Image (cartoon, rainbow, N blue to C red; front, top):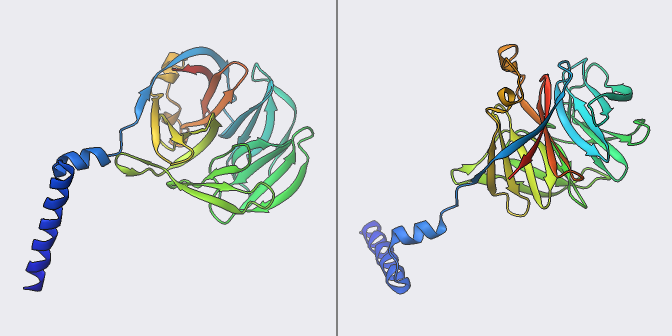
Length: 271
């Protein structure tokens, strides 16, 4: 009897709320529903060559030079490219036990994650000399920053805002869309209060509200390689050669997109 009474009471409350608001349950559900992301489009501005040995993990512009960090044990590097994607200076080669991941530039320092080693390497941005090592308790995937914090992804649905000095977590933000939390968040780029992130294994970039974690937009890059004149899909060579690498060039208001061991770097304008 108690169970039946509870059910009846619950139904009565629901009916009362509906009467008080003048709305039925379907109307209330629609109001509370999470809006689906809006699909954005892009124009291809220019195509540049990209080193097919570069297993791109992190990408970021520093003025007129492009910082690229790459992965794989024994092949991970950090280097700088000019506006024509030509290497400048010498490469920093990580020790063979490290798998390099996301990189970002913050206050004249370059930070580079490692995948499973729980280490973050810090370099002087001018000399590329390593000046510090920091600890990160999770896997390292993508890395970017806002004005005060570094922002880290771990391949799951959370992104973490961390202190640049100690790499301690300041805030954890779950990334979600209309279906729930979104996993496989990978390479990151922070632009005008939003986090652009590629979803590992998909030809897709999502745009995340950095305050709420909600995915506001999506960008489909399924046709980017063919638009850039590439005659083959890199994943036919290796399943790991997926889209990965987002860098915003504020001077031109364009994005540079590439992938792991892709033959091209595409400059695009999103609208």
